[in-house]
Image (cartoon, rainbow, N blue to C red; front, side, top):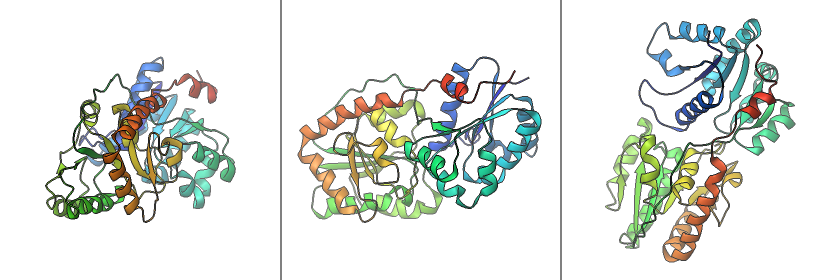
Length: 344
């Protein structure tokens, strides 16, 4: 009988790589390394391709004693009530690992979900602000912080360049800030600064924005798209750049994996002031935070500043390496004890 089960969107069927799948895979690895006994997993992407996938998932849940659950919004909305009912009948504990910072807004009109979430073993969120909100607004006392993290043993080698090498690594869509980055590229081109900058994109392209992206990227000879990085390639690749750009338009981002990967790779970030940004970016030290609304000019200003002031750039790169220590793998014993352990 399986004792511990990790359920989430692993993305193995299509090798999907994004914040959701990377965190789900990392949590599974963490559980395998730190939890005694048998550990199993189920990739919810499998349900799209196998008719009996849902039956397999339900059977694995019935057989487990502790469930580590990483649902996206649709899964939480439609499937979690069934998962909760099964946990009551078959007496397994649920640990819900929240991906992103949207849960407070999601629960506003979900009284049944609030009722159920109060009664699970633990809700593990990425940010202090979200923990405080869930306790204050909904009186959820089974909440703690489980930060985004990475497994890494990497020491970057710094290669200076005459150009300021800018990099974007995330899902390639407008909501991640493509429009502002192309505004930056337009400024560089119009001011004949293309010998001073390069911009490189990595990540899966959203089909909704493919035409917009491909039309714009061909306009600028200093802008490139280099495909999707495999997890094993990320740090060696990103460390060859100077600054990570993430002018996200998702206000309820939790902790973007791009920020963590930038720090591990030893480069600072330029991000918009999303809801939780100040918890993870020390403005002026590990990166710059620009206005969430109408921040295009500030993005341009900060990029120009770092190109001109290489001493500041090197200082911020050193601060990024210090910052990465906050994102080492956590200890699961704290979570298990927080929930009162596993019922035998």
